[in-house]
Image 1 (cartoon, rainbow over the protein chains, first blue to last red):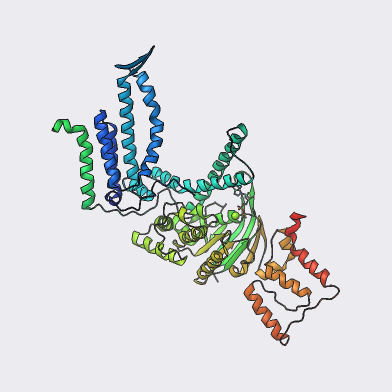
Image 2 (cartoon, protein in one colour):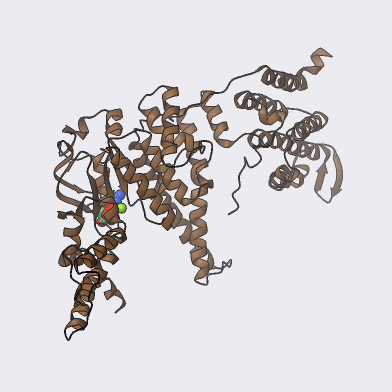
Amino acid sequence: MDYPEIDRYASIDSPIHNFDPRAKIITFMVMIFSFVFLDSITKALVGLGIASLIYIIAKLPKAFVIHRLKVVFLFLFPLLIIMPLTVDGQAIAQYHSITITLEGFQYSSLVIIRALSAVTLALIMLGTTRFDITIKALYMLKVPGTLIQMLMFTYRYIFVIMDEFQRMWKAMESKGFKLKANRYGLSVLGNMIGMLIIKSYDRAQRVYQSMISKGYTGNPGTIVNFKLQAKDYAIALPMILIALFMHTYHLVL
Amino acid sequence: MKEAICVKGLTYSYPDGTPALGDINITINEGEKIVIIGPNGAGKTTFFLHLNGTLKSQDNRILIKGKDINGMSNSERIRKVGIVFQDPDDQLFMPTIFDDVAFGPINMGMPEEEVKERVKKALSKVGLEGFEERVPHNLSYGQKKRAALAAVLSMEPEILILDEPTANLDPKSRADFIKVINNLNKEGITTMIAMHDVNALPDLADRVYVLNKGIIAEGSPMEIFSDWDLLKDNNLEAPDIFKFFKVLGCFGYNCEDLPLSLDEAVEVLARTIEKENGHVHLHIHEHTHAEVKDVMHSYNHHTTWHE
Ligand SMILES: Nc1ncnc2c1ncn2[C@@H]1O[C@H](COP(=O)(O)OP(=O)(O)O)[C@@H](O)[C@H]1O
Ligand SMILES: [Mg+2]
């Protein structure tokens, strides 16, 4: 079946792919933070440009990011309508008592541009590393063990649960069920989701038992070896500098 | 001979009140090859969960190599008894196969080099060399089953317990899996297996226990399968070959020990033919049909559902 694998293109060869996972996480986090605090549309657009450039360097297919950015855009699109109507400022159009303000338009554009560049960066970060490696990098960066294990199990069992849903769905369809947005359809769907939750609960218990059988004591037992090399610094340094420069250039120039 | 497992009067009910086990007494010697059969819900899985201390029994009723399981340290416990559960998706809970197979050894506190060594060895034992970096959801069911076994073998347990290892496997994977288990047993590991697949049972058992809440019977596969009433009362079956030779008996075929597997059947048949100077006589007399019907009936309690 078609899994929503975020790390489907993790085996491509590019400078970003070969970047040490820990350094990658830190560098990209710095950039993301830097870009979401940019305070003008011009700067935000430059940020988006930089993010796109890194995307090209990472050699990820276009569809990978566009598909996901579309979702983000749809999610944020309402801002573009609501904010010009609600934010006070210079009117660019008026209809009876409804005014559309320039500031509202600018704010909402700014929010959307910042979000798009942040998401693009996050997608590059996650898309160029196998997810299990991302988790291990987080582990090495001393992210709390509980969080690490939650990520691990989510990553592992999302596929199992999807398979389970698929099986139940096929069983339903083979008995002639077609989903319609009526009361019956929704109640059947609700039942299926309920079943899925119960199954997941049972599975969680069995997984826990098998972990105990292997001596689990609460630690995410795993071995990781990453080595920072010169090339990692060579990538991390300029990227972090750019991130800082975006906020401090007026002090320098 | 030394005792590997000794269970004395084990009784267990789940917290919700479901009685699962009643007064179980079992003694298994080192290196034995044991199969446990019993209908669904008989308590096989529950019993196994007790054997490595995942479910806690009351006061030292479970002794592993003479020592109370509840008194063992974490790493001693998993070094003694390894359990392979039925659903491999329950057991491959880490992001990669390497992480899964390394999980036990890491919890034993082994140094990194040794862990890697163990992972490599365990994967090669189940024929999954080079699968370290693979993620479980991209593996076939048979491969997942073998990976789950490797994840237990990496702890190098002295006693290996398998819960329905052959269920849902295709014939080739099933045969491979049985071979792996048998090799492990030959290396001296005590194996205990729960299974429904009676046709594969003779390959995996020197001794059979019938479990249904309590231990109903114990004996060689031959003794168990010859006891029609026992099988019937516990919804169990006999191997097809065994039944077939019972039927042959009605047609006048005469041999003392009935075969339980195809290999044995060939042997038995050859021996009987030699003894009878080169051929066997089969015939039909007036009682034959009644006898055949009788045999069929005694082993066909499974069809009652259709009636
Ligand atoms: N977690 C649980 N809570 C309550 N009852 C359970 C639980 N697990 C199993 N049981 C019950 O215990 C009995 C034995 O189950 P089990 O050990 O799984 O049998 P088997 O493995 O032989 O099929 C069954 O009646 C089952 O319904
Ligand atoms: Mg079971």
